[in-house]
Length: 155
Image 1: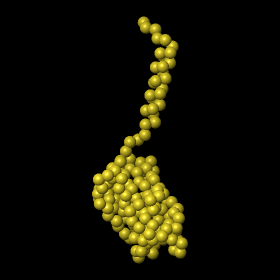
Image 2 (image 1 turned 120 degrees about the vertical axis):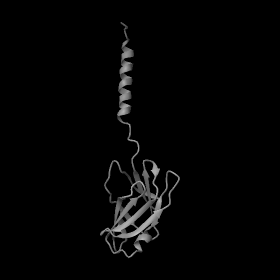
Image 3 (image 1 turned 180 degrees about the horizontal axis):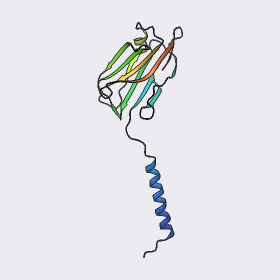
Image 4 (image 1 turned 135 degrees about the vertical axis):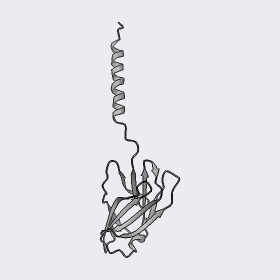
């Protein structure tokens, strides 16, 4: 029978504990993520596998030339046949934006606030939806509400 030194046993035990610790905290690979930007500044990021609910974020007062951008990634890949849809509180279509397929890993979908505020919408609440070849049924990303005179939005 072979005799092992105490230091060899301790080293083996330490390596076992260390390797099991590393594998215990391995992050999940994949999963959808989306980000929302206002004038190039990220205002929201959400990992869909961890949180499926639509969030409401307070924005500063917006003007008609403010640019809203959305990035949606399907497990690290940009979707095909991407569409952003804006609907009122009765779920009636206000505006639909279609975006060309992209080759890169990051492709933003953007529109200006005036594109939706200039519509005939009289609703106090607007919902922003995303759909693509990968999510044909669509997914609500955020809810927009505002005060008439202050042009303040919640996203």
